[in-house]
Length: 124
Image (tube, rainbow, N blue to C red; front, side, top):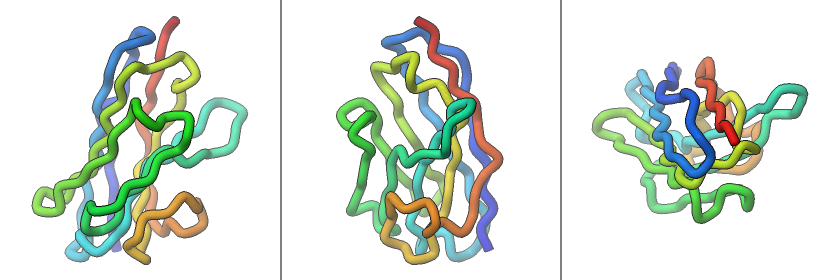
């Protein structure tokens, strides 16, 4: 069992940066693939970025590639999303998720555990 708590959201101007953090509990955290998804009002939840259990493989949505970076620290049981060059269309609730398969995935159905979300608002 893994419990996830996100933090770091807020209001930022377009072009600015934010760093989201996800704190995990559970003894098997290091074996989970991890990801960030986001959901804007009225829209479906969408994939943002994922990282394998070793941190050796990362995956990004085309819309954030080159601007966002996902990373993890297994010793601290933390996952991060560094978001640079933010755009108004990045405005959404951002969710951390854990994948028991360990590989990291773009497929939302692969994720077993979810955090409560943190809100990111980018003003133009």
